[in-house]
Length: 205
Ligand SMILES: C[S@@+](CC[C@H](N)C(=O)[O-])C[C@H]1O[C@@H](n2cnc3c(N)ncnc32)[C@H](O)[C@@H]1O
Image 1 (cartoon, rainbow, N blue to C red):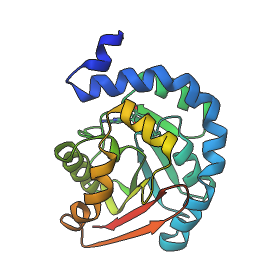
Image 2: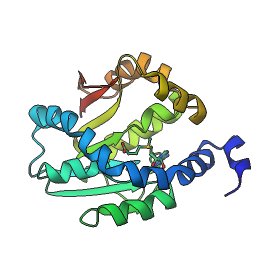
Image 3: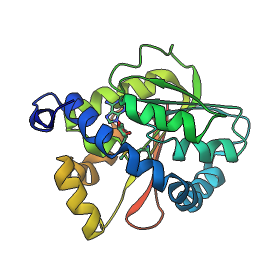
C-alpha cells in the first residue's frame, strides 16, 4: 500500500494503511497491552462472568484484548481484523486463538446469535456515526447476549489525543454520544470507567 492511502476518502483503505504501518510496533507492545488490560477485564468479569462464554473480538489487532478473554476461561475466542498485517502478527502472538480477516461493518463470516459476547477494543471510536451504527448493528446481530465496547471514557491523555488526530478518528463525538447510540439499540446499557481515560460500555440485547 502507498502513502496515498492515508489521504484516501475510503476509511477502510486508510485504516488498512495506518494499521498495516504500525503493526510491527503493536507486535512489540502486545505483552504490555495484555498486562495493561488486566484491570478492565476483571471489571468486565465481575459484571458478566466470562468463564464458559464464547467471544468474538472485532478489530482484534494483535489479539491482546482477545487474549484476556482466553485467560478469563472463555470457552472459545475468535478475533477478526481488517488489516492483513495485523492478522499475521495476531496469529504469531496468540496461537491458541482463532483469527480471521474481516470488516466490522459486514461480519458475513458469522451467523446471527453465534457468540455469547461480541466485543471491540479501541475500534468503534475510530469511525464516524453512520459507520458506528453499521458496526453496532453487526455486533448486535452476531451476539447472543452482550455487546461490549472497551474504549475511551472521560479525559483522554494528551499523547493519545495526538495519535487520534493522526488517525483522523471520531473519538470526541464517540465519547459524547455513544451512550445514547447504544441506548437506542439495546435493552440495557452500562458504562464502567477503568483507567487512563478508558473503560467499558456493556450492552445487553
Ligand atoms: C487501535 S487498534 C486496537 C487493537 C486491539 N483491539 C487492542 O485493543 O489492542 C484498532 C484495530 O481495529 C482494526 N480495524 C479498524 N477498522 C476496522 C474494521 N472496519 N473492521 C475490522 N477491523 C478494523 C485495525 O486494523 C486495528 O487493528
